[in-house]
Amino acid sequence: MLKFLSKVKIEFNALDTRTAACMEFLAQCNARTAKESNPSCQLLVKRRTDSFPPQISVTFVNGVEEVFDATSTPAQTIRKMILEKGQQLETEQMFREAGEKWPVLIPEEELRQSFPGTKPRKAEDKKQ
Image 1 (cartoon, helix red, strand yellow):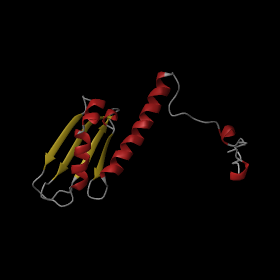
Image 2 (cartoon, helix red, strand yellow):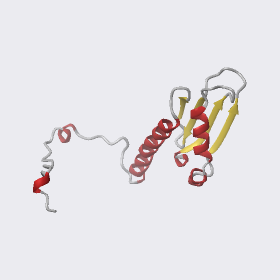
Image 3 (cartoon, helix red, strand yellow):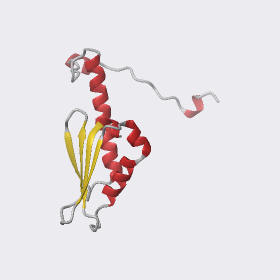
């Protein structure tokens, strides 16, 4: 997950009961495999003393920053969103390295072409 990020900032009040997502996400970021995937990723933890709601801010390697409300978003959902965005970044990078334009524009006539598809076989037709 960290391989797609350049910076992670986790803010929470330790006495706040809504910090579960922050603590879980912090544990995921501190895992050995996560750190090894991107040792240059900056991990900042800000322990607050006010009633500011817990939040997680991530900066992707392309500079885009995204802020998550950790009171209403579970850590696994945040992780999943980061991985999905990371896959998009990897795809974009592959196209750019290949000299292709990004985003890829599919001509309208190709979108309207019929697709023969595949017909699923019935269970009794399958060989056992």
